[in-house]
Length: 222
Ligand SMILES: [Zn+2]
Image (tube, rainbow, N blue to C red; front, side, top):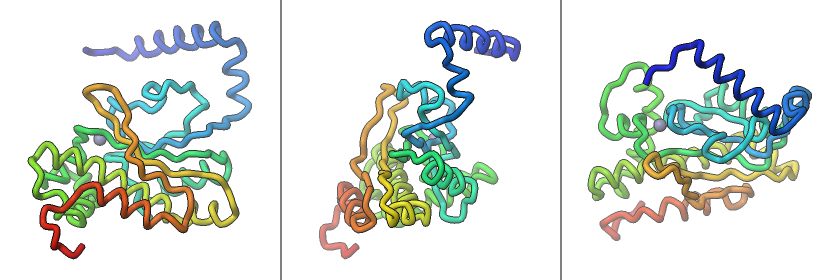
């Protein structure tokens, strides 16, 4: 399907008019301030739009997206966005949302060279390497799905261990970090039960989430 650019402007005018009709004053209110309760950190994939999936309006979710929903401690873009969300907007929930069928995760799993993104996806390859004993015994499709989930779990840990969250928790701010995964084939979100809201339990929550992917050889020491 090809959508020409003029159609986008026409769509936009229709949407703005319908929104204003449904909720008079909507844009005037939003123009004054945003106070979203949620921050979404998701994949840039066009099939995973934060607002549509969660039924939220503009102003209700603060969004950061990149290839394979990765949060790296040296990524000033992501960290600045997270800091603004926590310190200024005072969001209550930060949700890392991966998705099955993620091309970034698939490339990291197969070692396919895709270009500059190889360096970015190295972070997902690191996740795979760290947990290889939990992954390598699975059939290929299951391995891919599990790596999508494990990548989310790792990123939840990265956000929780960032100075932004550590500082927020130290001053008593209520903010939780969650990990979800989205199914392209059914449109449904799944909670990975890796919610972190207390610096004391971050490591235990992470360990419990990862242990749900058993290694085949019980004698392994990791
Ligand atoms: Zn993706």
